[in-house]
Image (cartoon, rainbow, N blue to C red; front, side, top):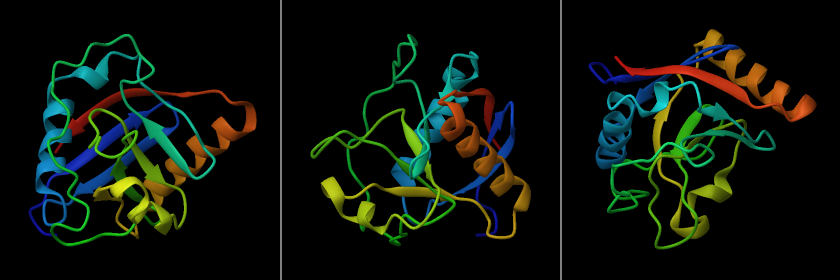
Length: 160
């Protein structure tokens, strides 16, 4: 994936580096890049929540108004199809025909049922399998949420 952009998510428990997969989801990767570059996620109000099978973040649980329209297409299976497995990042959506907007999640394990549920949850990024620091941060976030239900603050996001 030489030359692909990265999404870096900084949290109070460490940083997560995700490779944006333009080969699998070019529209979705561009959409998330636009959201991140707009600064919407850098207010301090964005947090990771959930920890049962994913950790999820976005603007849904904030009072931040998102001026960017929803995705026009769910790219699951349109290009290189990536499965929802540990360390992959997918766009969240409510139901078909919703294609998602500002919410996304990182899979904590193999969640292959998400590849087809509700039209599929489109994988648009992944952690490099050898990136132990990112996996340590992911696991720390999941453990903190599961341990007491406390959400984990996102301190910033950037596209590199």
